[in-house]
Amino acid sequence: MLAIPITALSAEAEMESVTVEIRSRVFIPQQIHLHHSRKTLLRFRNYDTELHTVVAKELFLSDDLTLSGNGAPEFGPEGLKKVIIPPDGLIEFQFTPARIGTLSYLCDMPGHNMQATIVVE
Image (cartoon, rainbow, N blue to C red):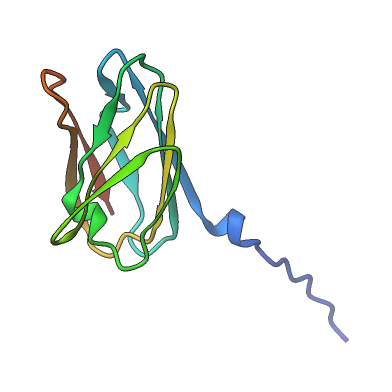
């Protein structure tokens, strides 16, 4: 009889986790890489003393998107438009990237001129 060890991965271990920091009106890093069809936890932490937003239309179209944290979601006729993040705030998007390609996101607060990209491979 042959014994083969089997290791079960927890749901947490299978999930990709990425954190984007907001400091001095900049998304850090400017580009993140995610994996197609892999469950992802994407965090945005605002270290600034002012409000910021995350506007990412393509990201918000995900069928399995859930949002948590202390941000304020804003909805329009087509669904989630953006999330406002307070100073020292944190928002978390949990989703599975369904499309390969590059997605842009930005902060649309007046004068902030912040944008970055997500590359799904």
